[in-house]
Image (cartoon, rainbow, N blue to C red; front, side):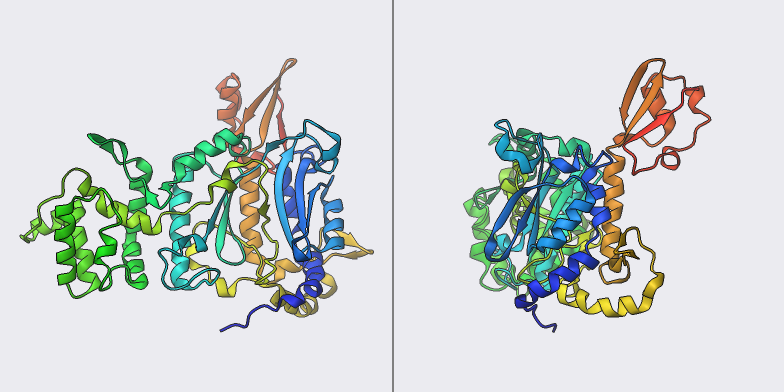
Length: 477
């Protein structure tokens, strides 16, 4: 088992981390979204959190160099990101009409919110068993954000301790006002207090929302929920009264019947199979084909018990307040968690299941890697900036942080690509097309009303656009 991070090292290690490992160029490219930094990046709020939780809010910078210089000078214990404002945040006292106008749509999943259902750990402690709650939450939310909302630029970031944050960078997500963000958050949130809403409509006119069916199917896929139920002991001896009292809509007669059968079975595996025989149509169909005796099929709201049982245990428990406020601060990717020393590393949705919290890049370990990195690359390292006449070593490219920076850069390109506009000049008129949903130049020109034969000579959009540019001009000649 690895030793815990010694937080007293923080002030000693942070200067090295910010100077050698923080990916400034990619980070500022992200927050510029292909626009001129002095016009967009400069209106972003940064908050530096110092020792004793001292917050330095409303900091803003004109470009990557000024941001880098200040971050390396102050060496904050934590870095938070806020919104893009209509004025420079540093001038917030000068403007009475100061307001947040853009910000990524963000979601926060914290394992402490699962303490009512996780039995392996509590509070800030995280193990591979309870990390599965995060895996399933990401799987469900990522699918819904992609399929129900059409969001393409989605980044999942380990918080550094006990959860993950999702950053949606699509232009249509960033431009949502508080009402729009609330609508998305309310759609995704199934919890009202300690109750899960698996049904919509009145007593005689009920239906299962698509979100519920998607989440339920995702949870059962590959036996994922089943394995969690065994690991967390949800089907152990003595649990019957608790299990069948969760769903208040369950009829008294069926509750009594289920408790009796549950207690009569000797193992959690047989109890799970019993529940599926009652409430899962595929399981009932299989049993009929095998000539097995089946219990009577539950009627009315009784038939939704298993959906409730599954989702009450594993559906994402979102901190809605984080998502609904445009000006809400959230921990930045690549900042350090001051208590664990872990880096808030970006993950793809597919990476989350394989991510090992105990092997996350940690501040003291990164600093310990630096001598060997410098020794390996010497004076031959490629750099993109010069410092004191010498090439600046991009240490993160050669460290345990490298693959997470690659994840981040893929997200950045996707976020910028969805924010680029085609500018096509016809005569004296200038036309704009959002590239968020197109993949070929022909599609763009068709949207602009240009004859398709003119576009037929052009290559796929991905091969002619430079994603770092905010505007692409196509010569009408």
